[in-house]
Image (cartoon, rainbow, N blue to C red):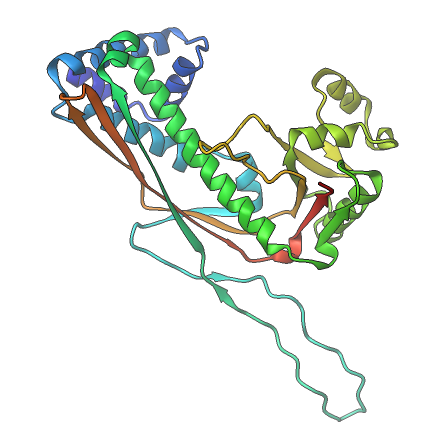
Length: 330
């Protein structure tokens, strides 16, 4: 009977990650969510007694992780990349946004000039494959029940998504090598001068669509710059007084990334001393196949071995001209 009920829970599309996240972070559940949580608690605690021959734990994790990483909206990445999915064994090329490199030469009537060309290059995405492996002890399951699986599921999902975010912005950072896109700041915090260059670059390319992505400490520093009041409405001033973070600068949105959010290795999601600017859509970011989850019960060591594998994504910058960054002094 319990197996049938769990199967019905797994079919409850769109709910499971939200419930797992609430259980993990001790957030308030609705009455329906409480019922599902109690059912899952009974199911998980039975596993250490009766085993899991139908691999229901891995099925739960797989369904929950796939729903979140493939179907849930991601406001920041969705705004700067064309998002999509491809089959596990598919590959493709991306048409680079061409620059206008046609040259208008001065010429005599009826004469000829040197030819100029447009580069319609096709780029190949950079593919990354990530996986997570861990153990859950029988003792932890007996003690914490469903919360032990909810925590594993939530943390695995966050780990995979954070790794993708890190990889994407590492590529953005490496793609900016010099020129007016690379703005150097001689101080340890952004100044009016560097931010004016930054916003001008983005607004010249896509007015009012620019996004700055940086650690929250630099977003806060932007709001504290001398003269920033000129860019602020009364509502923005009120919001800053309450939350202490900037939301806009000269029409450019500011996305703040908490320095408390880190990869499992301890690395920040964004490089320190950097502010990245993106003038609208800069390329493509596609998921390949779907996540697979493998489960083995190790009675000898009293643990359940879990492998979350095949989190595969490909990304490609097709319009590097829409990207800039500020690099601050060390």
